[in-house]
Length: 311
Image (tube, rainbow, N blue to C red):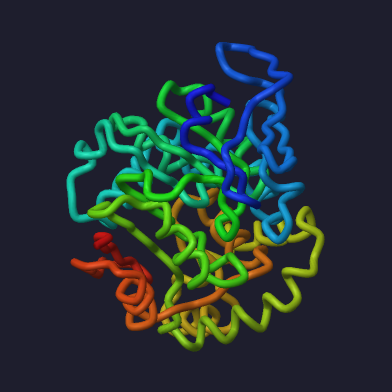
């Protein structure tokens, strides 16, 4: 943990200021220590990351996923520039405008998008409920302008109205209540700050219904078993590309259709493993923005992707 993170965090239980004690430094950062507030709430700093939760709760599948696929979606490792292109397609301003902006990555996973913010000169706080933050630490955690927190979006340890920009891509639909997650995050955005969001859509009914059926089974499987089972997407891809037969099979059992085999494996596991997986419409998410006092609400391609500016 970088010492200046103390300026931006508070106790998630009482919103009081937190202080530091028993700190041990390594590589110029706090490797171990204790955070405490005046009301007696205590949180550990372990392996360079402040831990505001006791465990990864309902997000254990992502702890497993981002250990197995730590570098798969990382632009600096895979060379396909996918994360940067997706990021740019989901916002209405050029990425170089992130320079010197204070940014929250809500559900940072292994840090694929936080890496882009850092690349373009933004200061980014990456928060995740899962132990994916430990993978993010290995990927980008020691960069000067990157801060990592293990915390809960629904009970966040961040101070209110401090961020210039918040984004949450592919995360809120994996929480118990996506709308409440959105409202919770909105509190941390400055006035005139922008919020960019992507959640799953509910439009492809056949695929949604069939995958929801299979998920009743897959979410109960041991993560290791499901991980190897999802490798089936690698060879099935070639059958699914066939006309008629492929279309029918997609409606029966959904797999990722990424041409790159490792991304295909990852995305299939990502679909079938999380405990929660809600789907939404543009009208529904528009109401989230509108009811939370946002203006200039814009719609982008891919799933339900929207951006708004806080009044």
